[in-house]
Image (tube, rainbow, N blue to C red; front, side, top):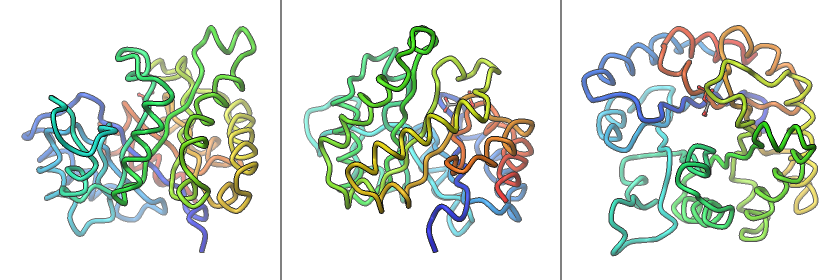
Length: 252
Ligand code: PGA
């Protein structure tokens, strides 16, 4: 059965939470999402990996991280390698989130190398792509996304592409309460799938493409109704167990 037959809902906690709050919130999320018809993952900040790996063990929720080094080991102060994430039982890792591209000036090539490092250790990279408001208004959306995607397609082969998840997150929709309309999101998702199909038609048809940017209980259902939207990357609402559960329940 193709992975796309179930939605994938990934929480991105960003820089939120300490061990005590995670000890409360994670079990709440596990309970609230138990019957949900979606696949689920939570990407926690690094310092919560130990706590989360313990609390999510043998649950329906996979563990993820929010970044990974493109390097294997050595003199890279402050970085965390794919081997280290694998050691905690991570299944997913977000790469190229717009907050890192913008605030830390991460380039398309660096982001692609991070995805490759994740893949080489059996992790599933969630490659974030998306345009700023200025880029959308000047009609550059598809060019920006193609550039971000091509950096990855240039670096890895079709078999590895198949193992990636792409998240379309318009920068203007992140944390703003302003979601892309289902039609706006669908048209970009279809363009992403077409681009990947140039490299591998089967990878394109199997891959999950998530939407992210102010997804909440009120907007998930209509987004998930679009044929190329295979789930969501959820920031703010993933910090509220009932909201994340409502999004995961929309994935029928
Ligand atoms: P948001 O964040 O749901 O709070 O908009 C999404 C993201 O940045 O991944």
